[in-house]
Image 1 (tube, one colour):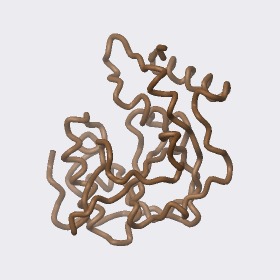
Image 2 (cartoon, one colour; image 1 turned 135 degrees about the vertical axis):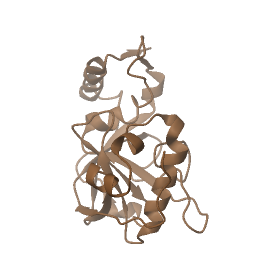
Image 3 (cartoon, rainbow, N blue to C red; image 1 turned 90 degrees about the vertical axis):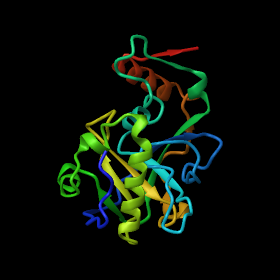
Image 4 (spheres, rainbow, N blue to C red; image 1 turned 120 degrees about the vertical axis):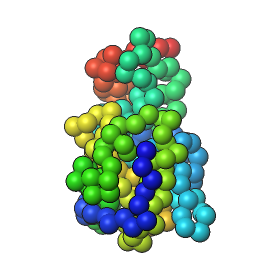
Length: 207
């Protein structure tokens, strides 16, 4: 994968759309990840060597599930399953930014300007995440006004994903006005929706 250029010219969109989160039900829905785990664009460090807290979201419930619970289930796997135990502690919420967010777009025109494509940055397996995290760090460093990233989902490509930078967006700037956080397995409607989506992916939820 190409390394980020020394100078990154960012294109922004100003967005304030509600976004969906699937998260650890023991946490507040607007809690930023302080650097745990391993994902496409996090964790990464700022220019001073401090880990930048992040929060992921998606433009629909289906996309949020696909990018979290189903993310690491290989499409080519003969048996695609997920344990109910991996779902039980997860919750769903919708967050609404209190003001428009300045998001760096990771769409083809923007990536092409940087000498890469979606194939290089978005449609890549977990083995590339160390390299894709370097891109997140470079974009974060390129413009102090950037508050996050915006791209088209890999696992549910009719929707978009975002990742916000916790040193530039505060939890109290993300409101929960519509839905009280709900454990995925505690509400019949939510569980049925999750099971329906799993069937669409060819995934079986097992006890």
